[in-house]
Image 1 (tube, rainbow, N blue to C red):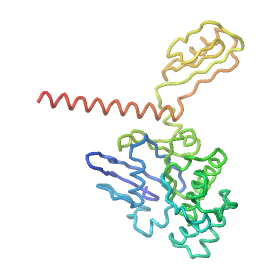
Image 2: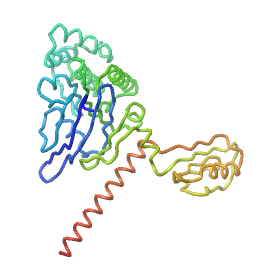
Image 3: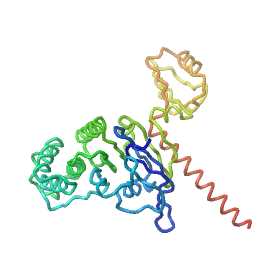
Image 4: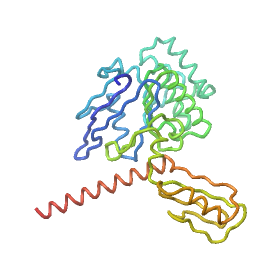
Length: 316
């Protein structure tokens, strides 16, 4: 598929550090893609290369099959992790100004700014200087700036950082709407519970390269473990699962980590035999747990490779 944003073999080094090491990603129109990784994994560097803020050492970045030029970048809405706002400019004036930078006529940019300022709950602050706003409200202004020109691609770096729950809900709603209207969305976030519930697909990167990708439901289903949670109607005294690891037990409830290939009917029967069961669930690990396990495994592999290399060097 060539439609939308396509990144192939992207690489970028900073000194001796390979910040991005062959990243591939595809953001089709109408899809919401989560870009996940620990601090320093290469997410922000990748996003900056997509925007042309920094150059790539290798790889290609295309939009609808063509290299991204200045005109295409005007059709991208970018929300950086570190705010790129003019602190001494008023809220509405700022949103309108960025609209004109993206190619809108002044009147059209003003109308768009009216809409987004109101939609994001900033109407009462429209004539305040940005520096007078709280961090959460500055984040709302940053989103308004990224949306004012109705872009076909949104690149959002930690858009939920610093937002209260109501503001975060509003932002999720708006981002989903833009995807439903046909915009491609690439977002990074450390709030994996939010990502799991809103993204069509996720890409997990570690040390600058992809280590897992797919739909959240598929990544969870592919995990090697399951969680069984049991609550009995009355205390059952001492209890141990047939297999796996007992994570929590307080006499009336238990949480167990089981191998995914366990005989679940046997495990459930064992729990039922201990006493009357009020609730019992068996679920794959959350996306946050899959992420932690994947990144930890990649970290361990990386260290093993370094150790092997060092040992080989000593032998030579």
